[in-house]
Image (cartoon, rainbow, N blue to C red; front, side, top):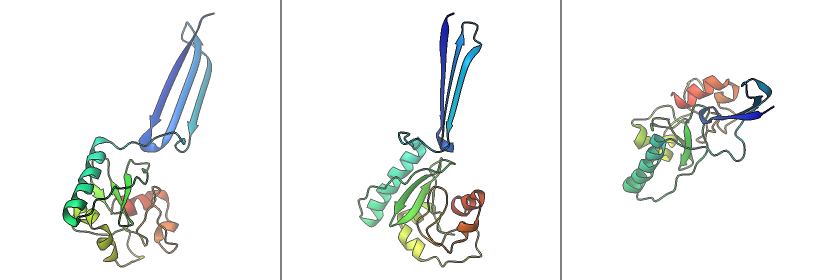
Length: 171
C-alpha cells in the first residue's frame, strides 16, 4: 500500500496560537492516521511579526520623537495582544499600535491626538489622575499584552479579559 503524507501548518498569529495537523493516508485520500496539536501560547521559537502598517507607524513614531524632542531612541518590542496590537514603550509608558497603524496609550483615559500622546507619553500619563470609576485607562503606565497593569489597586485586576481589552484598547 502506497502511503502519502499530507501536512497542513497554520499559525494564527493574531490569536497567539499555533496549530499543526498531519494526516497520513493511502492513495484513496482517506486518512489512515491523523495527528493534530494546538499550543495555547506561542512556542519559544515563534516570532511575532508586525504588519506593514504597524512597522511604518513604529518608524514614524521614532522619527517624530527625534524631530519634536531631539531624542534618538529605538522603541522596544513588548509583544503583541491576541487582537494583533503591537506593544512598545515611550518614557516607561505603554504605547500600542493597532493593526491599521493607529497609536493608543492603554493606560491613559483621554488625550488630544494619538501621535502627540505617543511622542509625549510620559507627560500625558503624568497629567492623568487615577479614578476607579472610569472604564478606560489604568493606574500604572505599563500595560501587558493581556491588558493588565502593574497596580494592585487598578480595576483591571478584577475584570475579565474582554473588559480589560476595552479599558486599554478602546478607551
